[in-house]
Image 1 (cartoon, rainbow, N blue to C red):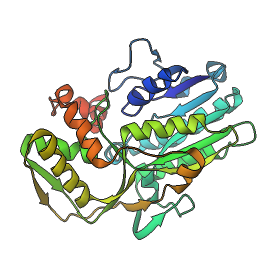
Image 2 (image 1 turned 135 degrees about the vertical axis):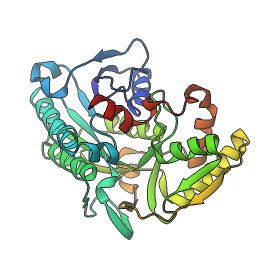
Image 3 (image 1 turned 90 degrees about the vertical axis):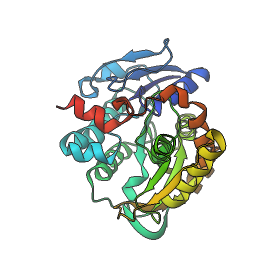
Image 4 (image 1 turned 90 degrees about the horizontal axis):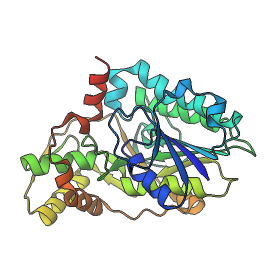
Length: 318
């Protein structure tokens, strides 16, 4: 099977691509390398804007995975116009020409942020998705466009992932557990804006596994799937991080509660992914903290702008 991974040199792709190659797949990566290249040296990388691709460029691929686009709220709010192009229009175009080129499946990396703010609801894939901010709106638009192309010959799968964290060769320190780990080891403090806010959490290794499950599921499967290990309050996440850095690095960090309001609050159920994709996540928050501690030497320069997507994005758009 030949697979094209758009955005494959990013945070999740740098974990996913080696796994796919290890399973015997022929993988090409389409990426502008904003954040560098941390993939194995034998990976074929195509440095092109997605909107310059034509049907002939996708001929011969069995599946296309979309990991590209802007990756968080700060980037979306810094440039809403780029956000709506890259997260909505670009995947719509790529899925459209993929289908016309004879690709059999398109996997879209979506986000649980599309659920917006709910006080006590446990959202499954049929729950009303209402976001009032650029990032969530654009991810929902991209998802709708891709899923609308599904038919008997073209499978479309959208993975609504929870907040991803953990060690990746293309490291990020702007994700909830990673950020808490960073301040815990550098300042001996874990800042919590609002301890009551709920988040679905997933380790980057499980996020990669979810994409593998989507790639390998029966050709007749399409649809939306929530992807997470579990739901936790931010205060609970902080407790696990504090315990982890104490256990693995012997660092005693304190938790600083700020009680700042947040516009995102959601819990999800992942029964559909478990039952249809056979997605069974393996890594608890404590495992995520352990992976960060074990690989800390590789990203000890924690103030390096390359670990923060918004900083790189601002430098690229001065």
